[in-house]
Length: 74
Image 1: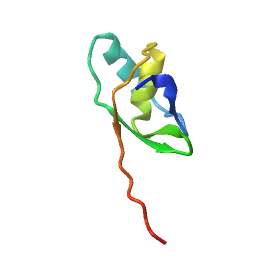
Image 2: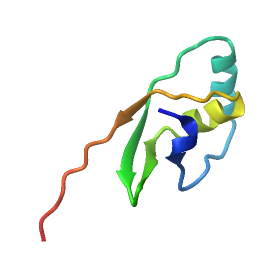
Image 3: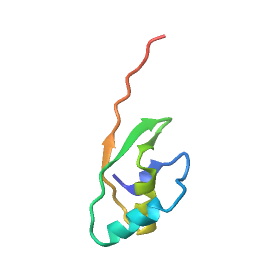
Image 4: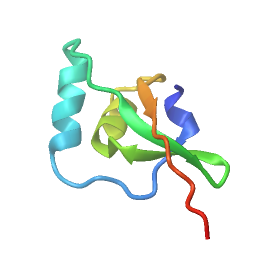
């Protein structure tokens, strides 16, 4: 999925995104992030650090898993 198509509600803190960015630079493939579609946008459910790492190293595409949410009645 295009990195630019994913909205993030809050940015991660700490050094983990930089650690992931370094891994990406060395060719390591990170696990897919989880996204869900809400309010007309794809949003991160799990993987904020990995998404930021992709942005930091200039990657245009990120592997994703779509989260399935059950609808609750009532």
